Length: 108
Image (cartoon, rainbow, N blue to C red):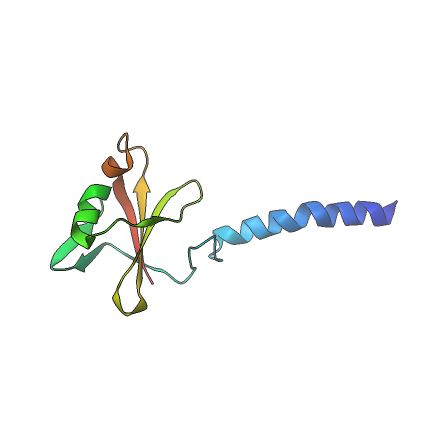
């Protein structure tokens, strides 16, 4: 009976421990853990800042990003020299993705 209880605890606790690790910087989905958060990011002579809408960001970058969030609205753009730009958008700032506002900017 003790062995069965121990096995059940292991089966239940292992996924929980893996989920807790997600909050501590481990890789979640397609989001690397070594991203640097920045207040703003300049590209093509224009600056992306917190509070800008998704459509404003797309106008600056020149293309749509790829949604990599799992529940959260996190959009990724591949940039030059292997860099990747990840932007978290607030889903509460508008009715459609184009109206969502930048909350957080991170770069690889």
